[in-house]
Image (tube, rainbow, N blue to C red):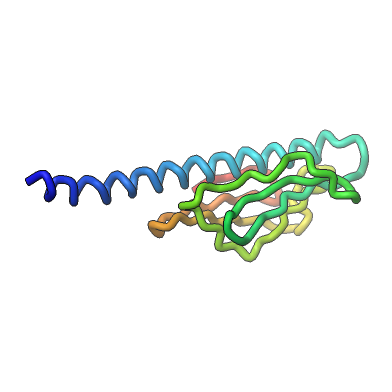
Length: 131
């Protein structure tokens, strides 16, 4: 009986852990995108702010500013259960805090269980939305 209960409980527990790590990573990424936009807006110079994504294991991102790419936020490593299947390698914010690309920016985080979260930076409003 204990073995049967454990066989049912362990997969649920690991699904819960993976879901929590995904939600936490998505919230942190959304907050860091907002922070990067604010830094770009508050910049006294006409320097841009870039969030650079590390698209290989261990996945993560860091933030640089200006022509010399001065690191203003060191690499944030994502948990090992999080995958980063994006073609997006950089998000650049201009001095108005808008994505430099001229369009909405969409970043997807996925975990090893197949669950995903999508973070969108809306070009016109600068709003960061997590789904």
